[in-house]
Image (cartoon, rainbow, N blue to C red; front, side):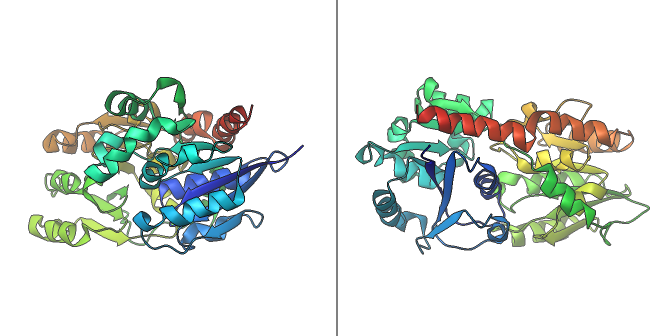
Length: 359
């Protein structure tokens, strides 16, 4: 039986959510049925080392996404894959206009965010007029699916909802070598937040919340880097938040999650937050802002976490204190995530979409 050739498209394999998911899919697709390749605009990123050797990397050596369209189209024309799987919003948008020039190739777009919240530039929004050219569009959450239908008139039958997978084997391997971070104080409750330091992750709101917790023995550990780093550091100093520690990007964030007393997701919007899944995989209870992006699909109230409104800074601060005074069963938290989002469950759904396209 001829194998189905699939080309996945990403800007790079830096350690982000979309990159993690595509790496997982490419690594674990059945080799009896599929031949996966990954086209990168630039061959760089921490996940390159995790990619299996039989996954070919196509490097088009292009720094900017807006300059990538011509080399991407050239590779599709030359290689004539059965399926093109584009996994990054801006590339998805540009590519949609050109799908019909490849009648023998099926195209899938995997959305990474609630589009109406995330895409603000008019020149990119224009391309969503052609989004129905895709044979399938994968939405990670009900919020994302509803947004595509309501704001971009995407045909309902083209959208397939597939939640993100959690690779428990990968996380457990990382946890075997993890130790309690030195910055965690034993006489304090240690809270962890992880994400790109940008407006969408809402760390400004989280700092305002912690300005109400100065008299509590609570430390906030923020992992990540981004364009708002300086602003957030200045905000921390202005508010006098000695109990907030910025750690930058961490190679093994799971040791922070495992030993945390609580994980907080402060985002203004999400796609389907991997870090919320990973916190649960580490057995850590979560408190998440009530924002679009599948939060209510992940959180099982009182089992693996709770949802509150972070814009109510005082109320969210009181919720943190309340949660920290409770105790939670780590195995139940892990099982809550594993039973719904484990790698095998989600990968079966991806394989089904790919196979159905070739019928």
